Image (cartoon, rainbow, N blue to C red):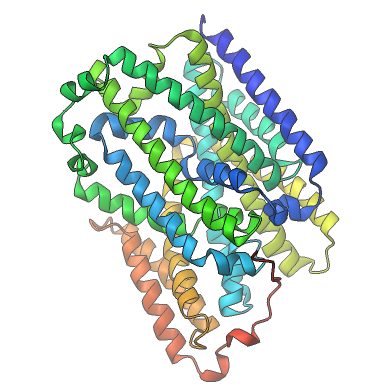
Length: 480
């Protein structure tokens, strides 16, 4: 109880000030273009902040310190895999930015042409990942804060869902991106202070190096301390997941110009690596002080019991803000698919921007409401949502990147695109059901590539869609 009041006060101040800032941004930046893609004019430092928040989420504060505790510099390997995905996006960023896309299905339509099945599968597989993020983050928030405050987790989740709307509704991606930037700066400051604190308790870097296993501390050997199998599993989940996550694409579309896109992606990769260095040092320092933790993910929580109350309060409030940032981004991403790819594309093509904006706000309430109900009623079953990354990647990775590579060859067909997605899902699902030793997503990826090439080749020439013939609702934007 001695810690509860400072945590509550700090959290109210942080959330209140950032919410006021979000409302201020909403008054300045109006319109559906601002809501969907940040007006395509976000400054580079804001894009870096929101890309960083999207890549790391709340896991940086718990899971990554846990990896550092158990496997030392292996956290850096995790960051290198995320960074590799962001660097791959650098190579296609110019094309993405110039097309005026809003969603991931826009990319598929540009490559393969308009097809209701193709668009529907893409929209669904795009939606499940951020929706899963929203539901699981609500559960994580409720579980974490219930232990600290003693309040019922359902009440806490309702509070988070309600407050998150204050960040989403004013200006969608614009207000989310700016508040992500503020939260990111705050967490970086907390991270720097925490490093000095943990090293002071541990007795300095030299003391840490003598207390932890050499397999964790030595460099570069420590990069592989987590084990080759785990690194392969990370690569087959994180890399495809990064490359098919619409939230990264939205921030590319929202950047002011192509140059800023590349700077933001490379800068985000660098910042992520620096934070992974932080997580490794934090984890190993905590292990040198208390090597007996049964669960490495308890390391960050244990450290917070050793710090002054004022720092605990600030750190806890920014944990709340980081989780809230993930929820906000997930809801906004789901809603932009529902409004643009389903409602505008099939139900009401002539809808005006004002009505689309109002619908976006209404659907934001609906989406977070559904996620809240799932989190409270089926929290024990939410583990399956982790698999959404694999299914999304199995269905979308080949159509996007093989499609991009062959987009000007007049080889790909709509039928090939549909087959690629269906076989990608089937391959992933069957291998998942068989509980294969090899990560099941690899089966989906292989089948997806084979189906795309074979079915496109077998489809008659008259059904092939050349690059010049495609007519999809995107517009060219300046790349300067």
